[in-house]
Length: 322
Ligand code: GH3
Ligand code: MG
Ligand code: MG
Ligand code: MG
Image 1 (cartoon, rainbow, N blue to C red):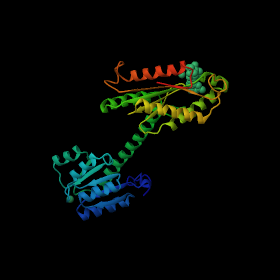
Image 2 (cartoon, protein in one colour):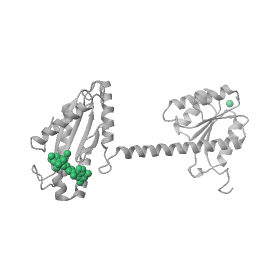
Image 3 (cartoon, rainbow, N blue to C red):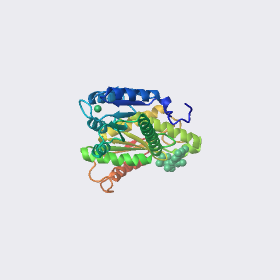
Image 4 (cartoon, rainbow, N blue to C red):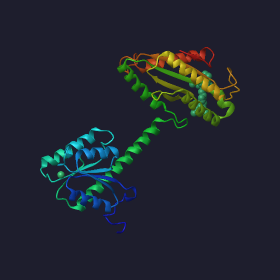
């Protein structure tokens, strides 16, 4: 068989996994042999319960599913798969002797991607399997590309922490969650002291490197997976702390300062220290109402935190205010 043969499975190297569910052994054998010959990895089961067990043990790339089988019919098996996030995207091709339109329509309505009637022709089964595997692979690639796009759209290119867009989204999302759960949330804004002078002294490139180190340092002070560290602006960083009161937020702010002290980045032109320092504003709020309302929403929290940061700058920098 040369490489242009329509029978050659393009994904042979990947060895797609196919599960066949059929209680008629000659059918099971015929389908297994045919798909095996094409280079697929094939498993076969003869009833509904074994099908679900086999699928959860190791999710296949595609399922050929008979409808009249013991335990649980094919429709029920499919419904179980579609209700579970882990298995809902596996393409299911029904293969059944029932040839009424109503049976076929039902198969599609519960999430089947195709329907083959018995007696089947092996070439037709193969062609349909190949097509649905190709579609599935394209879907997977699209999902990956989407994830990568999302990652890039929400990450700050320089520091590799969340960017302002992600910050805005997460702030609103957290706000709504806290409204719903009747819990407080806190915000920290940290601004590097005399960073213009840092750039002027050490150069913009070292300034960039400094921002990366500060970002990592702040990350290292934050431990809960629901907390978000973001680059809020040029040399300003933000931490969103869901389910956090003022005391908890102040504790994190102190940790951030302690981490930065350990980092000990020289800043000879700073008026407060010979090392790089941060001014930090902290605020906590019990979210109420619509996050988009400027008087009661997320803007209120930002404003409170920003005021605290302004205080920190006013009283001499290198300190935490709330
Ligand atoms: P203050 O203590 O009042 O915060 O003074 P400051 O000098 O830190 O604040 P100012 O707002 O005057 O200057 C911020 C500086 O941060 C100026 C800007 O060039 C620098 N900056 C902003 N983004 C970047 C960046 O991506 N890389 C570098 N190297 N510098 C940046
Ligand atoms: Mg059957
Ligand atoms: Mg600033
Ligand atoms: Mg600054």
